[in-house]
Length: 372
Image 1 (cartoon, rainbow, N blue to C red):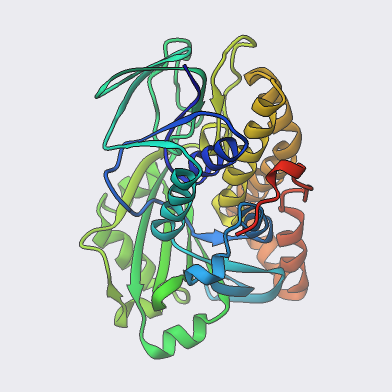
Image 2 (image 1 turned 45 degrees about the vertical axis):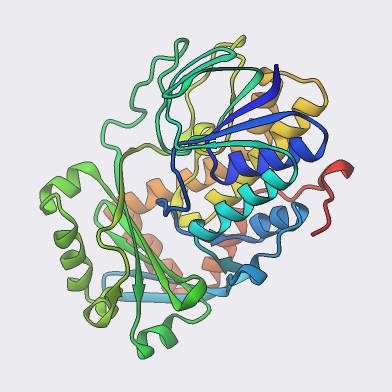
């Protein structure tokens, strides 16, 4: 029987697979897509995220990652800019996820692509290619829900978010204005993030409440028109060239920690399956990688899923609660106006907020100190 069956080949799944295989465990990873693909993601690697990648032996800048050291916040006519308390990196999931999967395969992981997970029932997983059984099941399917025999899935939020992602080729002027900067534009019921990634591309990731999306018009062209109509934050769109035939989209995004599991639930839930932080903090990729390290450590110590959940909450709960508090403030028009006023008076508060919503740093266990 396989030591670990990992469902999903994103950041959390790929990293956990590589860590466990390099430590001598037999690992089987199932990925629904047949090849490299784009995913809804801000593609912002915070300092914690690229430190985790370095621990995996991955040099993100060698893959083309773009340094980012400033943040620009736009709300209506107001624009506030400040230094980040670290140098972040912009790198697409199209590149990074595949690098992790290649590393996992090189470490001995069995990778099945083009296989859909139909249901998880304890240590047995029903797939489009038959049942798979393992000593430990790690659920790392990101934002995609999976049917489980022990879990009743309900929306955590009565008005969840809808997400969009598009890559663009910017005009020379817009590219120069965005250089080294992550730009966050606040909208009624949501926000948009724009930054450079590898290959001279800009990544736009936009989320908006489902109710607001319905009022706007329920299509991508209306969302682009809304962004372009803003007094600031959307002027670059007029000369931008979209690089996908259509945007990557997803619905029913509910942020915060995942619902509590029964104490005897044997499934390890990684990445967004364990909890989704507010996107505007840019720590989602770091959280996914952190969950992989915690899960691998627990499995190598002979610990079960309940111990993993406890350790995961201890290491990530504070970041997620702070991030969600910030998001709730920005969703309230009066509080948002007050907050923007404070930031205009003291732009350095942006730097402090970026620092306050980081994951705590940690030292990896010795067996996770991999060379490239």
